[in-house]
Length: 256
Image (cartoon, rainbow, N blue to C red):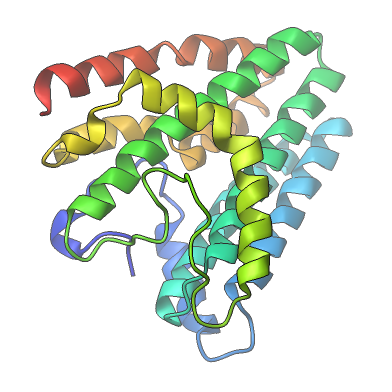
């Protein structure tokens, strides 16, 4: 079950794990496994990838990075399959993502000659890239019928808890989410304040934007590691961030 109705789906280059996610979600829908369990599982996979990088097992690291990306798609898929959406799961997923992104880059910094400051810039770049993708994607889902609206365009207040979750837990995770993502959201919203006013986003544009999806970012890292190009990873993502201004420019000029 996609985040978009069938007629509105586009080629999402970051969502290559979706077929596997659908399969595993269907296998788990009548079990006691919850989306939160799956989120914890992708966190473990990401930590194993970090460990593998620290031990210079780059092929294994790449395997667990891709596995993390696939499992990352399963939790949301399972929530939609079981019809058990939750803000707790939505925020926990995002919090795990940013922590694992930071740890992955810092582990690369530790075992390579990349400096801390270059790595930090790369981390900031990756987060801004992912925020732009999520910003446009969430806007699209809210514009179209049948879209998943658990994520909000502007995360400016804690949402009301959904059935089966505690309001206190939602509030706590919302505070953590806004603390770690707030600055990135603010920057992207400032750069394209009027994006939410667009009637919709064409499929070709969303496919282009999906180059910034977390799944695609992780795929790039998983390709560069076993090729022995570990020193290029941080500089690449810094340069790759230039596409942010290209995408925003395209949106402002061609998509009203």
